[in-house]
Image (cartoon, rainbow, N blue to C red; front, side):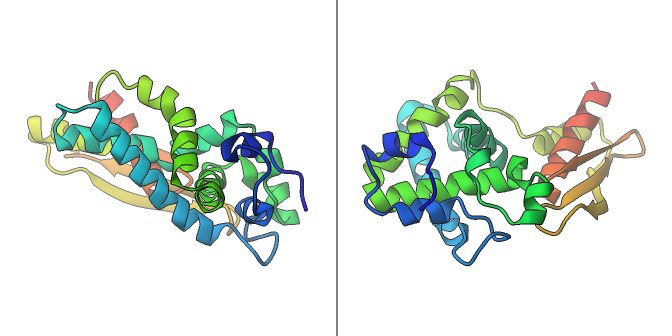
Length: 220
């Protein structure tokens, strides 16, 4: 049995009843047979339920659209990865040799997936109350920092382009590179012949978001 991160004991109120769940949650596909993927699937849904319920209670007078923007920011892979970094999780992630040499444990993709898998493991080991307490504790800084509902860069770019009658932003995948287990994407966005920007990300969606944010800055 591997050494588990200290926060897991705090999350389940002592020693886990099934420590193998947490070992699996920390195991990347490059390392072994039992990987985090099924737990990640479950943890993603638990995180979504907890965050949706939290927002519904926290903002009783806010319309669905604003709550959706808050929700999308809180459950995003980047936010999950930031939680993982705050928990000092990267050294505990089990990787194959090549993935370890490529520092896959530092990528948003892997870190975010492992955090969701851990939520799934907490849910199975300690129940929904334990999983909810974990999420509320470690996501609170991100929610408390939302003075207003965040606007997604792609939506903001589309609105600005419409205001200026520039047409619809066009996104183009320039390249995919890096190792198979931790690919990187480069995307270009252009709008109405009035500007373009490129950016990279751990997923095509992440790269599009970063490119939209960069073009927004140019169009100010």
